[in-house]
Length: 574
Ligand SMILES: *Cc1c(COP(=O)(O)O)cnc(C)c1O
Image (tube, rainbow, N blue to C red):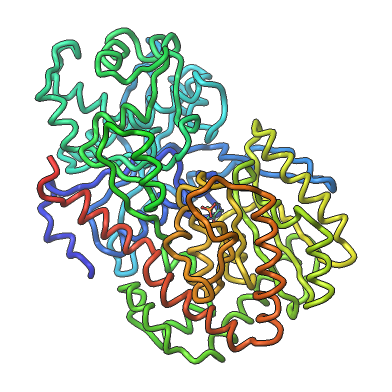
């Protein structure tokens, strides 16, 4: 379905999508991982569907980080500077936000996301690098997830309060829904309260104002651990936000144990709240028992993440897939030989890309395992290397294995940095038997190449910390089956031996790395590697059903339609 945007009266159904990070293209380093990619895929799907959506984020002139790895896997970082003027259009309005008593001027740059049928969704990137601002304030839109708490809270003021002010200045007077993608933009609710107060003090706003604000806010939470939710010391909050706003948030019960919790603000002031998979929904309900929480499982943008050879294949067999991703269901009738051929092409492209980036030439005939994710402890990207001898034996006995890895660690994430070093150590231990390559600079382009060019996609997060996970969905769109721990989306997408395989059978118990690595090796040794080398037709069937069963469902088009039905347009949600 494509909506005719002109069918929506101009002012009545604008959805303003707020996100601290957004991944639109690899050349714009304004994302760090899944949260940002999801934001980008959501607006791309909204553009395809012709929906009246507008997105707001920060410019991040110095990006997230550029990653450098030495031969031991020690990570160093540099700035990922880019040129906004080459890709974005500067808007004329400027707005002012108050930060720690200073007036900070904000401008906005616009990026137009063009959908499959020409409808555009504007994304506004807020920018404080203006000469009128003090040097510190000019830097506020430089680094994604950089700086100290003061810097980050100030960024959230720019995003939430500055974002609403900028939308008004740009002519968006009546926004039907403000969608907060994670708690970073929760302060937008404060801007809505101030509008309700009509210039009077926030101490005068009443329950009616709360209803009015709630009516317009939608919140998606992504974090299954309490520690993952942004909290700011209340003294800092008072300093940055001032007395009136801080007191208001305190009265509205958004503070616990002397700190302001951004998730609590978002929970308290939203009419609709959701987690990002069925399992994450369950976890979130336990974490926030006072709130009604729904589930909308994530999806990825099919056009963005499908490789060239598979796009061509779908165009031939299910040409409707671009307009309506549900048609990927019928990929089940594509001849297996064609699936294998398209995959071989995607694998060739990946191998060429690996060689270009690293000088290492992988073997196109060897079964290739892909592991790429943010390097952080709970993702456990090193589980495959738990017992190098076992892995070596499988490769020798059954058929050659090679492993392709990528992922950046946040500069202050010691556990994540160690994880990369451990994989480098394992790579050197295994060098004579299993080629393990760790590529620098995991970004959207590398993600697309890896998810489509490897033979299986491995994901081994520690349960229950993977709220959803999306890279396995990208793999499914390219006929690459997953081998994954049952957590996040995979609990829903997994059908053993049909869409891929599970690591361990159990999804409700906490993770045990020993059991899980045993299960991982067992599946590789007894089922997956033998099938890959000896029953390629059976393996191809699994590739095909991954597309048909999972590609047709875990896409951003279905996800955005669910937001439309369950959140934006839902009747009966106050
Ligand atoms: C898809 C993607 C992610 C998120 O993948 P997960 O499986 O959710 O961890 C992170 N980074 C990049 C570059 C991606 O393409």
